[in-house]
Amino acid sequence: GNDWNVSGTYRTDGKEEALECLGVKPYLWRPEDDIDLEAEGKAALAAATHVLTLVPPNSDFDLDPVLVNLSSEICECTKKGNLEWLGYISSTGVYGDHQGQWVDETSELRSTVPKSVAPVRA
Image 1 (cartoon, rainbow, N blue to C red):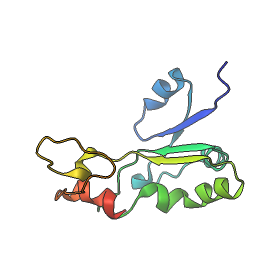
Image 2 (cartoon, rainbow, N blue to C red; image 1 turned 45 degrees about the vertical axis):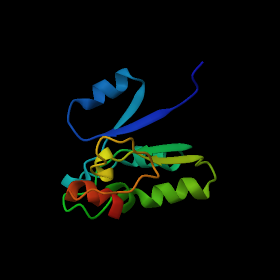
Image 3 (cartoon, rainbow, N blue to C red; image 1 turned 90 degrees about the horizontal axis):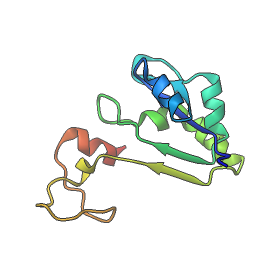
Image 4 (cartoon, one colour; image 1 turned 60 degrees about the vertical axis):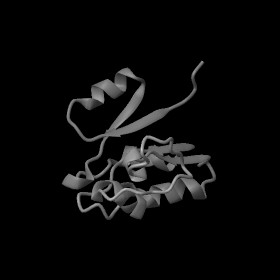
């Protein structure tokens, strides 16, 4: 039996049905359009044990929308003691050109593309 409760956000209309089919409780969140995460979604985040963020930086490439908009909910789940794991998936573009060599978390960040440099700065 699966006793996980999985929630996720979506930005594009129509994506909620795909998330629901996967057993994910969908919440609309589009900070770039000033569409805030609804209270139920914020409550789910505040009660989370595991959080994975895949949200790209804002259009100026200088801010992480999750940290800017949802840091109080993340802090709340930390204060409650239920947050066990927090992960961030970035683009492999942050590593830049390694001439076909393998890269991992310890590799030098060589990107010169603004969109790929932004996650490093955020």
